[in-house]
Length: 401
Ligand SMILES: [Zn+2]
Image (cartoon, rainbow, N blue to C red):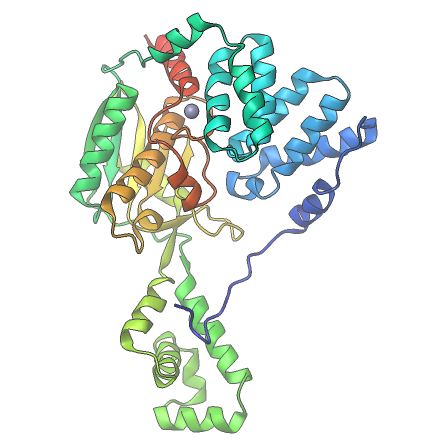
């Protein structure tokens, strides 16, 4: 439901990114010059440093640079740049095909195989699908048989600690623990935290909503109308500084515009407190002791989280070395289908667990660990690990023995 006086918050874009988007949109001519390559390399170097969510918006810079390398015959560089872009945008099927083409040529069939299958399953482009089928035909039969039997080598003497903030329902606790144990073949220990989420650097978007709405009501109406309304509600103008009075004023105008209390509750629920994921990770570090065989801690909260940067709207999860935090908030908000909420949460937990264990970010389309930019992209994925992730996991496990 759209409310007549609801405000849209414009997202902030820094000058750097605005400049990037402009240049990244320019197409690269058939043989890129040194200057063009250097300019794209500079953009990509900035993106490499950027946070996932910010970098995703400008992912075309990776693909443009890859095309530029390709035009100069620099295949290795082209390939590395394409896979970087695919880690942020795994549903770019044209680029998935390009990466697979190179992998088949090099004999990296385990990487090419899931890419080509995803292109065949997902693309509407008949030519691309036909090309993918033909490329798949170049993968030796023995490999396909081997791939079908690829499994994670168990590592149950290592464990992952799942730390739940208050309010996480048992059904999700059990599903996350069981699915991580089954898929990663490590032990999972669960801990119920007896602390609330740290409010340090939290962001009160509700307060912003109240202030901006009030401002609009005051500037959008005649001083006389505003004075009459305030008098009617028994509010002095100076009292509008106070949060409760502000809320009372905005809510009263909202209800007198023909909306119900239920409408107000729905509207207000969109503006809850957002917690800084970095602060929650610090809190996990202070409250969880890591034994020798524990690889790290994954904290789970029902609260909405963000990266601590004003540019970031929200996060599904955040990780740093052996620590990670994930939020069920956006997965569960307004969603009655608990099986779907569970699937979303499990995929995020796989992504976080993989990070803690130390396997690289995944660029395989539809892998549970591929980076999702939205809930729709999260729902497109399968809740299992791809061959690439299984390979990486086995390599890390072998090094831990
Ligand atoms: Zn993967």
